Length: 325
Ligand SMILES: Nc1ncnc2c1ncn2[C@@H]1O[C@H](COP(=O)(O)OP(=O)(O)OP(=O)(O)O)[C@@H](O)[C@H]1O
Image 1: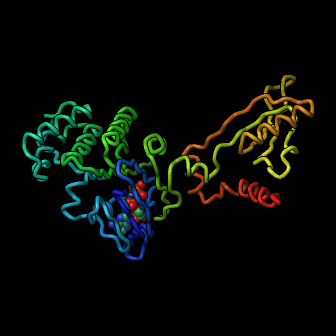
Image 2: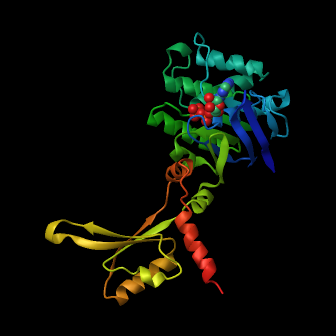
Image 3: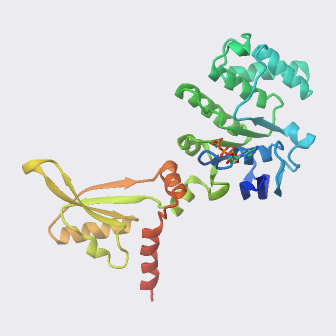
C-alpha cells in the first residue's frame, strides 16, 4: 500500500505555477527520486509533502496523514536544501535539543544520536557547528532529520555542493536507510546518484512531471537500448519493414590503413542478426557490435530539451504495424 499519495498537487506563487498538478504514489520502503533542472519545482513539491508549503490545489497524504499535522510530523524527517543550524552549539547538543522537541526520551535520544553520527562517520562532535566544514554540517542536518526515527524521509538535494567522497558517503547512507525499511523521497541534480539508488523517479521540468517510473521503464519509453553494428558492407536492406534507426559510414585508422565501416544502429538483437546475415551474404563481415544504453542523464537532456527522441523509433514501429496483415 502506498505510504505517500499525491493527487493533482499544484502550487501557484501569484499567478506563476511553480508546480502544475503532480500525481504519483510511493510505496513503503521505496526510494523515489525527484529530478529536474533549476526551477523545475522539486523543492516546492517536497515542501508541500513536508507540510511547509500550502498547496494551491490537489492533495497529499503522507503516512495516512495530512502534511503538516502533528501526527504526520512525528513520522517524517525533512532535510531542507539549505539547513540553517545553530552555529554556537555542538553537534551533540544541537541534536539533543531537537530530540527533546520531539519528546524522545533522554537515554533513547543519546543512543540514537551517537549511533547515527557513528554511521555518518562524523568526527569532532563536540566542535561548535559554526566551525565545522560544509560536509560535516550536512551530516549534522541529516542526523537532525533522523532524530525522531521517522518512517518517511524527505531529503532535498542531500549531497549538493559536497566533495565526491562525502557525496558517496551520503548516498551510501541513504541506501542503508532504505534497506532498514525507511521510505525516502529525494531530489537531486546528479542523475547518476538518482539512477544508482532510486527504485523510481519523477522527472520534472517547468513545474510538470514529464516522465515517471523506474529508470528502466523511462529508458525503454525514451529510446531504450541501441545496438551499433559495425560492418564492412551495408546490410540495412535486409531489414525492410524494420528499418534501422540510423545507417552511417564511419572511418577507422588513417592514410592507407583507413578502413570504411558501415555503422547500423538498430533496436533489437533480431535486427543485429539480420544485418549480420545480410553483410555476410554480400561477402562482408561484422567487425564490432556495441550496446549503447542511455543514462538517465542522456534521457533527461533529450526530454527536457523538448526533442522527441522517439520520433525515429515510432516511425519504425508504425512501419511494423502497417506491415502486419
Ligand atoms: N516563495 C516563492 N515565491 C515565488 N516564486 C517561488 C517561490 N518559491 C519558488 N518559486 C519559484 O517556483 C519555481 C520552482 O522553484 P523550486 O525551488 O521548487 O525549483 P527547484 O526545482 O527546487 O529548483 P533548484 O534545483 O534550483 O532548487 C521557480 O521558478 C522559483 O523561482
